[in-house]
View (cartoon, protein in one colour):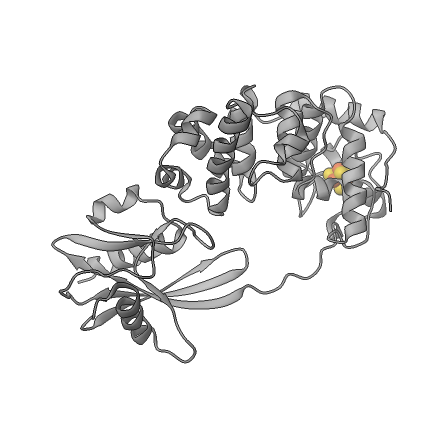
Length: 364
Ligand code: SF4
């Protein structure tokens, strides 16, 4: 079956571009024409709010100013610069992609969306965004914001996850991208979704498309896009222990791939069925580190939600224990001063566990 085609909408394009030029937010990456800087911003903006991204983007660019410096960096430094942004596979993929760019493209980003998609972590959206914004190629983008705007503009009532609906939305976005300033047009679509055509209470009165929007006319804007019910995140339970020796705390590094891959954490692990948190802690220290804990004081639990999982982490302060670490379950381990923990690449669970330890230390 051939992909659907959409008709050009020159008037809608003009209205949107005029609105964008008058209303766009002044974001730091919009002041740059450097394809590398634009690519980094697009990678960071996936699943993450603009306000959160700005300081990360500025620090990342200061630390790794070009493809070559990112390709050559210590992977730990890249993860540290990413620490707190979540979805860490994005950072690992950025570095792999930078290494591929050095090897195959002399360290420059290709202008062509097809070639961009061959890079690790670059999907159809990112390729379209970089090709259009950095190189003014007439390539479409379709993210959550664009999906919302287009399903409302066209009053698409079918569930947006359906293949045929996705194909139609891509076709509509592709038709819009063709013409003057495709990069601005794509950014305008995303900006409209982020600032005017918001999920709840869209500001239709100030929307450049208010006269042509079918969902507004039908009064159905807030019900669109229709999505399949979300599956509840899978519940996980784990235990982690704060073990200190001579003022240094033991941390371990997760394997490079998978959930929180390459990040540092407190030793511990998941509870087996019907296992008590303290038993799980002792078992993981024994099996994963060869350390026989003589006991641990419970400090309560913290919660962390990943995209598909909800983790309840029981935090313990371990009783001092002797013996050398004989590590089996992690890629590396270190004894670090609590003050040096900030410099480690870490995810939400370690940050929350540290806060719990600090909070309990302050109690009389
Ligand atoms: Fe969204 Fe309202 Fe504009 Fe339609 S008129 S695109 S619903 S903001």
